[in-house]
Length: 202
Image (cartoon, rainbow, N blue to C red; front, side, top):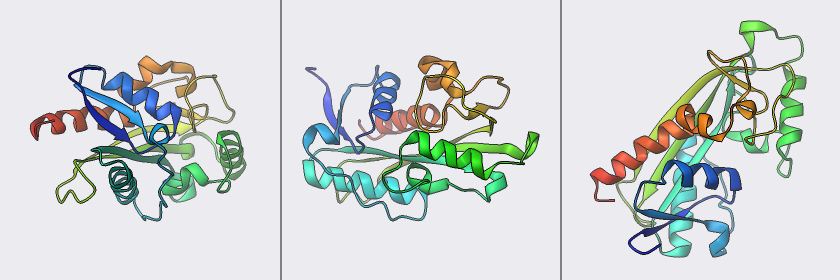
C-alpha cells in the first residue's frame, strides 16, 4: 500500500466498504473500515442524510486522527411519504437486519400497485481532513426506481433485493456488483466525491 494515503471509512458495513474500495480503486487512498481500527459506531441523530454523514465522519476522524469518508444513505418510498428515509438501516428496529427491514417494507406496501410503488435510493457522502474540518467535501446523488412485490436475487445488501432501478426489470440484487457500482446512488456520489477530493489536493 506504499504511496497511498490512509482514509478511514466511518462505517462497519462490509457491503459499503467493498463498494467504496471498488469504485475508488484508481484513487491514491487506502480505505480502512472504522471497525478495523476499534472505532464504535457514532450516534446518528441527524435529520438529514448529510447531517448523519458529517456526524459519522467527524466521529471517526476524531477517534483515529485520520481523514475520514462517511456516507449516509437510504431508501425513500413515495407511498410511505418518504419513509424509511434516514431510518432505513433501523426501519424494523435498532437491531433489525436487512431481512426484517425488507419484510416490514413489503407489509407496509401491501395493496400498493404499479407506479405507486415508486422510490429512490439517496446517498450523501462527505470527506473530512480532520474532525474539525470547517470545509468538508459533500456530494449527494439519488437513484430512481420502484419497489418489487417480492425479493429477488442474492447479491447486494440492504434493500437491494426489493429495489428495481428505473428502466430495469431486475432488482439491484440481481444486477451484480459491477453493474450496480456504475449507476447506483453511491457510485454516482463517490465518483463526484473522488473528483472533488482531487480538486482539494487529495
